[in-house]
Image (cartoon, rainbow, N blue to C red; front, side):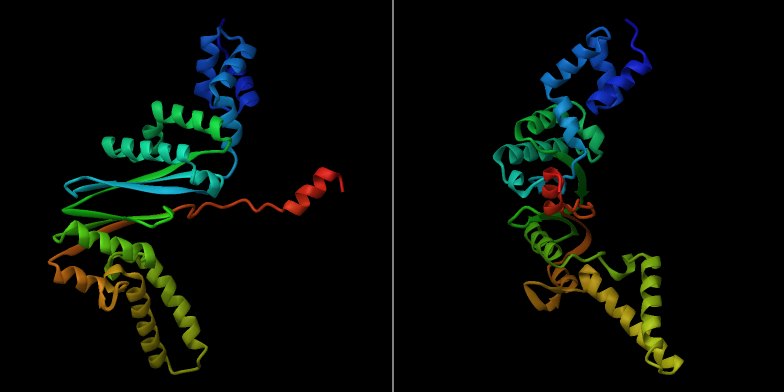
Length: 285
């Protein structure tokens, strides 16, 4: 039987699955849509697809660094609830994901998930009953790469150094996790962001009624403060506030070259559930 676009469309609408999955399922059963649905349900894909639209903003971040400290991989895997994020099955899957990403040096999520990882994800969704999503991955290579994962596995950092050692990189990664700088040095701050801050500071300074030349000096001072507060090497080191991160690195013969910081759920718009309204609706009130 010919697999028509209309047939694929109908199966997609009834299962919520992607076009290729639906076409493959129909080919395997010679176009019998009811049998295709049955087979998809058996595999757990249809169940997983129904949950795919639900927001997964909890979860964990995980990291792996090479034994020679030259390469590191960072991944975020999301669940719907913090409870599942602590589940051994979920954490085992996260471990598999970071290992695969590390071994292949793959940060493109569709490419990373193609094959066994996606099959395992679908099986986990079916077993746990929540939407599970591999959200992102990032790799860092350098002379020295170190990492830090906060105790709750919700924040993880990779830091790349030129010179120094993995222990120093780990200390700086811990600082990045705690303080969340925007850039390595003030020269890395995007020009448009600096201009935006200048405009805000200018508006605030003009309200003071001070002369123009004083206002300009105030703006320069506030911009410099903004850059220092948000640039990693300018920040006071969390374990010794009398020393900046830049000085810490320099005294160890190192230079901070880059960092990557992941925090679980950052940038994901979480659905706000009004449980009272939900109960009222179910009760017909």
